[in-house]
Image (cartoon, rainbow, N blue to C red):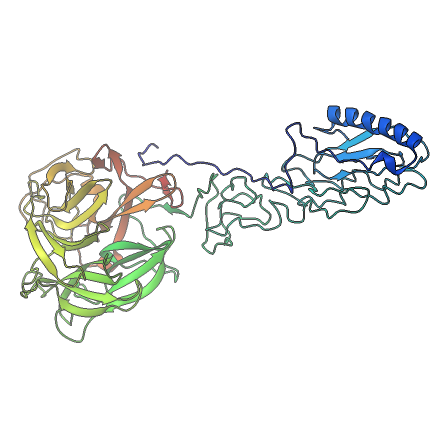
Length: 581
C-alpha cells in the first residue's frame, strides 16, 4: 500500500572513539626515548646505540599497523623494544647490560582488534616479562599494556581504547585500556523509549532486535525507558519503531475496541488528545439499559498505540441538576490543553431532550488530562452571550484555541480558554444545510473542516473544506470517501430531505476527529468516525448506541487534498515512525 507522509531525512549516529592520552604522530608511531648509552661503558654504549638505531629502522617500517596478536615486545632480548600499536601501549623493554641472546633490536608489534572486535583488546602484552636478559635492569616485568579488558564484549561498534598507557623502562604504567569500553560498560539503549533507542555504543539501535549496547531491547518487552514498545522494525540514528497498533474490523461492522477489562470501549462523538506518549480518547458514554441517549457522563480511555485501550473511567459525570443534569443531552465532548495556561478544558454541547431547545456550548476544567473535570457552565463572551448551537468541536493550533459549530461558526477563545472573544461565520457546508459533527484539524499550513449531512444516526457522505486560516475564507473540496452511486431519494423512514447517499457513506461512519500521529519518519492523520448502531440496519437508528463501533482509517494526502479512497482492514500504525501499512 502506498501513502504520503512528511518524511525528515534521518541521520545515523556513528560510534565514538575513546580519546588517547596523547595523540600519535602523523606516521602512527610513538617514539620512546631510550636511556642514555653513556650510562654504561663507552664501548658498550657504541654497541647499544647501534642496536637502538636498528630498532627504530624496524619499528618505523612496521609498527603503524602491527601484525602480532601477542607481541614478544623484546622478551629476553637485550635492548629490544616492544610496541603495541592497537591499544597504543608501548613497553620500552629497557636497555640491557648484555643479556643472553641479544637480538639486536628485533621489534615485535601487536595490533589490537579493530573497533567492535570480539574482545576489544585481548591481553596485549607488548613486551610482557621483557626481562632484557639476565641482569637487565631496564625491563623488569614490563607488562607494557597489562591485560586490557578493552571493553570486554565491546559491542555496538564501539571502539575499545585498547590500552592507552605507555610503560617506559619496563615499569608497569597504568593501563587504561578498556577500563570503560565505549560500548559495553553502560548500556543506555532503551533509556528513551526502548525498542530501538540509540545505543551508547555508537552503532544505530536496531529497533527491537537485541541491542548491541549490552542488554537486550526486545522491542516488545518493556524497555529501560519505561514505555512498552511493540515494534521490531529497524531504526537508525535515534529513530525508533513502535509501539504498533493494528486495526481490524469489517466494513459492515466497524471496529470493536476492547478495553483492559475486556469490555467494549464506550466513548463516541468525541476527540483524542495526546499528552506525553499517551493518547486519551474521550466521548459520550451510552447506557445499555436505555435507548433515549440522555446524558450519563463523558468517558475516557488511554492508549500508547491507539488500538489497545485502558479504561480511565468517567471524567465528567451527570450533574445533580442544570445543563448536564438528568433528562438532558450532553454530546460532542472535546478536550484541549489551553495554550496560555496549560489547563485542560473540555467543551461539549448541552441541550434539552429534543436537542434543539436551551442548547449551548458548555465547558469544564481539570489540572490533569485524565482527572475529574469540574463543570463550569455555559461558554459565553464578556457580555454573557452564549454560543447557542448544536454539534460542535474544539481545537488549538498551538497559539490560539477555537470552538467550531455545525452551523459554520468559529469562536476564537480568550487566553484563559474560559470565554470567547470573537465569532466568525464561515461557509463550509457545501450543498448541505449544515456541517454536522464538525471535525477540524491542521496539516502543514492548511486547515481542514470535515462535516456530515444531517441524517440523524445514519451514515452519509462526509465532505470537507480547506483554508489557510481558521477564519477563512474556506473552499469546499467535496467528499472524503468514494461516491460510486448517488441518489436524491429520501431513504425509507428518514424524515430529513433527500441527501447524497452512496453505498460507501464515508465507510459507514460519521466524522468526529482526526488525530495526527507524528513520528520520526513522517506523520499519519488518523480519521475517527463513529459507526453508529443502525448504519446498516436502519430500523432502530441510534437506539442502541452502547453497541456503536469505530472506523479508524488513515487519510491520504495528494498535495492539499485529502481522501480515504480505500477501506483498509487490517492495517497497522507505527507510532514511533509515524507510518502505516
